[in-house]
Length: 330
Image 1 (cartoon, rainbow, N blue to C red):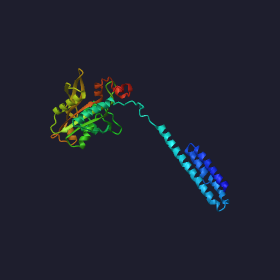
Image 2 (tube, rainbow, N blue to C red):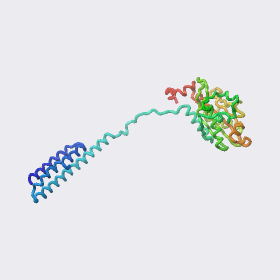
Image 3 (tube, one colour):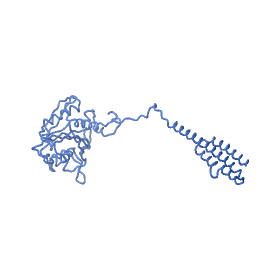
Image 4 (cartoon, helix red, strand yellow):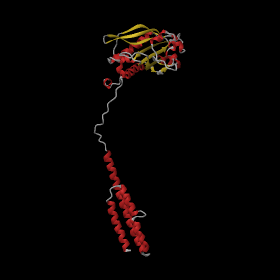
């Protein structure tokens, strides 16, 4: 009995020293198995209880339970300290200095074309218009015929068109958006149609095969050319930031009658800025409107033209170059 008791006491002292020297949870688990596992040191000592008398066994059993409890207590205490130390180390490693300056990222800028489109939309939405969008690939009907331009009409020569193998085409203007919108909506209506358009044009400082237009359309009872002039006068005032002298020159567009081109006096020069006119009765008939009841006006402008004028850009190709030296100026 005295031999087993001494072994148990020695085991308790040994376990306490071993547990105290452990520095991570994985090693602590190994010590637990080594002392308290099924094949651990405590189990090996207790195998000698079979040689004890009936009176000695309870005494050794009590001592063994005390040793086991003490070892378990030491293990739990050491585990708590190691877990707390692990958490503290993790917090120290992940601590952020909130006073430290962040990593600087260059701010993006709005492309001059997008800024012009946004400004035009903002002005006309403020005048009660809604934005309408359509397809860049169109049928001949919506791009030409419904706009009073039948197949043999000479006005088709005004727009050198990209035709596709399936008979469709890349729209030459956003007027096709107006036709589709009128087909699906009853008057009165006021819309603005921004978008990309395509024409087979020689690329140079002032021309591009791909460019952007914004067109407006208003249909209602009793609209006149005076309403058109008043609308464009307010648009020009807001767009250029001041009251400018305006000149309406008679012109021709297949889908408006009468038609005009608008010039403004800007920085001492007369500049052509947009085309406009009253919607031709044939266009109203094509979408099912009665021209005896309704009238309307339309106008269109080139976004690149406005960008070049307002930002003093000398070459339209700069707008498509993606040159950061150029874009950083805006």
